[in-house]
Image (cartoon, rainbow over all chains, first blue to last red; front, top):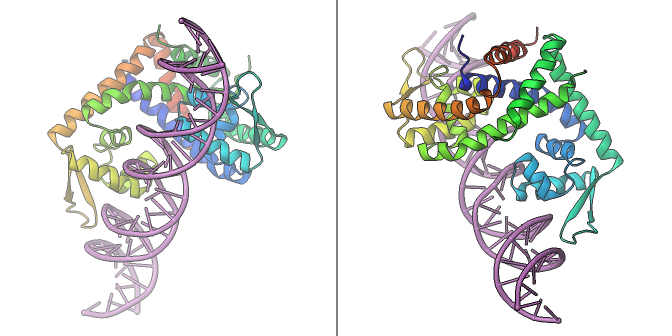
Length: 138
Length: 138
DNA sequence: GCCAGGTGGTACAGTCTTGAATTAGTTCCA
DNA sequence: TGGAACTAATTCAAGACTGTACCACCTGGC
């Protein structure tokens, strides 16, 4: 059977929508908007606004907004970077780490609820396939 | 090896972003915004605004806007539904079908460029896994 | 040191999105 | 037939998003 790229793409798209949608209530209770969550979850790996924008593929101006909100909520703070005085190093507060972990758990739980339908081998398989497809075009 | 749901979710998320981003230029040449494309691609299966909103999980008000744009661009038209005079049946024009097919091809090409890195068996596998995970929670 | 060209982050204004209210049509029951 | 309750689609105003312009700072060459 031929596997159509567009069809797979649509399937995948829909899966993510459904999962995100199922979690949005819980995220709200934690005090996070969806977009803010992405930023919060990525900060540890990409601690500067410009890096966040690149990693999450969102405009720099949007990062400014989300970071402002997250700072206002007490989830992170800005510090001047010693290496480069233009940069703002973003640092998670304890509350921020807690919120991130709770949100990630909620998300993982929902995704796991779906992953649970497939075998452990399939999960490993899926991970391998996605990683392969994510590599930058050679 | 344990496979973490949150991690898989993030991988998947990123893959879709990358693919969509890679295609947005081409979509622009066809004359489609990203969001409009989703509507255009779904119209054949869900020919009423309310159905589109449900299928694509976007607000009805947004569907109204995208449909208005697509109509203005000559890609579809509205007709009163004979069965229920409240409903607007959406019909693709020839230009609309052509645009949809071109856009789907572009998207499939980009996705395929990545699918090509994995074996045909893996593709079938991926499709099966995604379908399983997409089923409504029992 | 000084300048030119470049990058990091933000502000603002215009655009896009969408919840709530609205209008139109349907259904059903008395 | 009349009206209450419902659904389809739209409008509109408020809020979210982001392209552009901007300022601060960095880097390299002179």
